[in-house]
Amino acid sequence: MTPRILGRGENTPLSTDRLTVAIGTATGGGPALDVVAFVLGPDRRVRNDADFVFYNNPRSPGAEVTLTGPATLDIDLTRVADGIERIAIGVSVDAPATLGESTIETTLTAGADTIVAPAQGLRSERAAVLIEIYRRNAQWKVRSESAGWDAGFASLVREHGVTVDDTPTSQTPTPDAPRSQTRVSATPTAPGSTPGIRMVKGEEKLSLEKRQKLNLRKEQVHRVLLTKGAAGATARVVLVIDKTMSMRKLYKKQTVHRVVERMIPVATQLDSDGNLEAYLYGSGYAKLPDVTVADSEIWMDTYIHLTGRHGAPLGPEIDYDRQIGGVNEELPIMNAILDVAGGGEPVLVLFFTDGGFHSKVPAIRSLIHTASSRPVFWQFIGLGRNRFGILTELDTLTGRVVDNAGFFAIDDVDAMSDADLYEQLLTEFPEWLREAVRHSIVDARYVPR
Image (cartoon, rainbow, N blue to C red; front, side):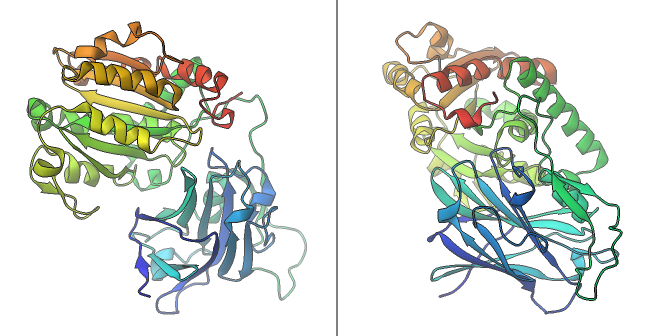
């Protein structure tokens, strides 16, 4: 069977629960690679040092991950505990070598299927996560990452909740001792402590100016979540953008680009993988590849359009006119989001529109009412001085299990400060989250205690 090749950022479902992972170089040369794995919870951090698999700890506590050779691992997903959401697999090299000196490939064997993830974009880095195996809606998937750290091993393990002592050990290494003598231990956040601002893969690839802007926005998001008792919460963050012809000025002025850019920090602080799920909608809709920190600019240049065919190089080509259309029809996109929500994982939908919600009002009202028992919070944002139909009535809808929707309108989103935008954006979500847990709509493990 022909191997499935995964480009950077691509993912594919896994057909079996028992996997073998082998990491090597296409040419067989280059510096020696140290293979590591992290067994991670919803916060993308290890629970304790036993969840960090490397040469001195070749097996995770539940035997989910076993280092069977210098560059091979066996993974048994049937052994993964309920509180574990992903397994990150990476490599490091000793200075002065870099990962750019090799053509690294990760080969995953899952039953009769073979998946190959070539490392891409790694140059000066000395450590990287190559792939992540993660659980989404009870389905295990694998994603090609190629997310690297120039500073090497220490930065890689710190990113995943492992504390590093860089002081060399005092004992004299034996001839068979591993090359690296760095000691590692994990110090998970103590119960009841305040979670900090999250970092995500790809930040290290940004310019200093862009990283500073991202950090300032992350701080604003974190501050809102902290003051509302939701810091440390985990949720899928879904961005829905109106792609109808009435939005043409906002597309032409690149206002929509800036909206996407300002929503990325929300995903970094809430979403379990730090990425922003995205849809465009009109009379139909299109599910787009996730927006990542590292590739956000090329993503916006590729997908933020009103008409035409777009997708390359990030994904399959989409016919915007035929598939998405140019007039408002909200029910298809709302039902599509509900179709993939489940398992008790909360979903925050950031729904940007410049109007509509006038047709099929009874059906929309019924959908929001019925969806109040689902783990989805709808935050609608109106752009401009327009009519927003039923959205203005959301706070008066009765008979719902919980208040599962909010709405506010912005005359000029570019004129609104980040602090004010995030304050309004996240005003109702934390309270919904607590109520949804209380009514057993959302699993309590996604919410800080």
